[in-house]
Image (cartoon, rainbow, N blue to C red; front, side, top):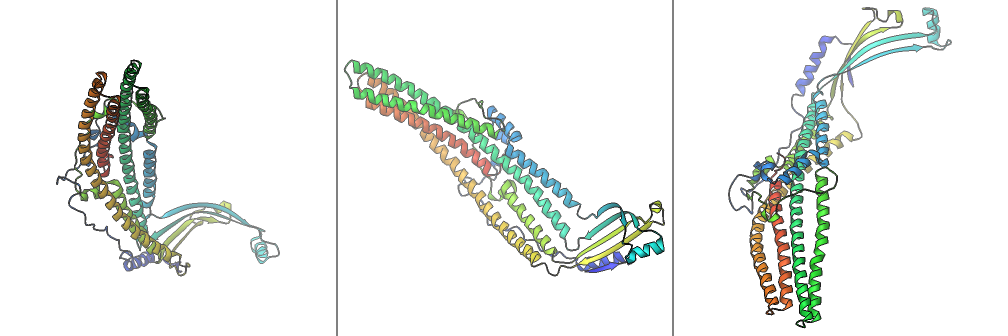
Length: 475
């Protein structure tokens, strides 16, 4: 290490200016964001509309009052979201500290030392002969200031890394809120589906119970055999078995929604019928390029590259010399009575030093190489995240379109089977149809109505997934 000791103060700026002039350029070149060949439209898009559902705040997208109350609670009290907010606070504190990196450090020190050498030692004999004492005291009060010149961008890189980390924490909170909003909405629609399916099961149970009573009357009259009674009873028990199954599923879904909303498991209030729920079916995902600016996880992957660039700059700067300037001054005396005697007790010291790492067993070079590898990894992860995002939007668009068609077909099928069930019951009571025809009609109607409720839920879930995939839900 080359140290500038006991030099006049006016030479330090000249030394610093010379070093800064040599290191005027940045030691590391940032790796730019990769240019991906994004398509003009999504694969499953049916139009070229550049608008997107992402522009709608979640209150405009989800209009059911009960669902809005759940979302209000979840966006405030959800524990995962609260953790994301605390991560933001932590990253913000780190950023504030990094912004102070250009400032010098200062310490204040006060101390008293007593040195009592051996009487047979040279110092002991000298103390006795020249000072007339057996021990020597030293009183010191000083302030030390140290400043490191950011000649290679080390401090600047740390600041850039902290800023990118802070912005990443912001995007992470958005991503968590987007996910929470989607999970609450999907859970709410799933709860409405279970309510509908439970009502269907109870209605079908009542219908088969009525059929069973009539079949028993026919058996008493000798019009049907015991086999008919047994098969209708089996159909009745099948319908009855659905009821506790749906009731248990409702309890589990209510508990899950309560936890998402940040409260103890309990009941969930809801109104309306699943088949009448209106959700803005806007099959417009915008354009793929918009995902780079609106979807939080893609933005986070982009910021990860900024962090990686800063880390590479910092680790490379560690391979270069460090210029540090220190100054110390205060009061010093070997007698307490003269400790604060000014100016006699004043002292000052200024040093400037350049330190060049020579041999660190390869640690610094390895850190730099690892930072470069990590940066290449973030580029790959960014590409993958964009591909996943585009794929999710494309899948959601296709699902929105197909579930609409499926639901329309299922609605017609339910209407036809309900009419068939009514006709079969009337014909059975008139003796024009067998009990097997009634059982078949009732079974088909039950399955079709349960399927219709499931398809309606899938349609609503597809819209929610599209909203999440394009980056909506955090506004």
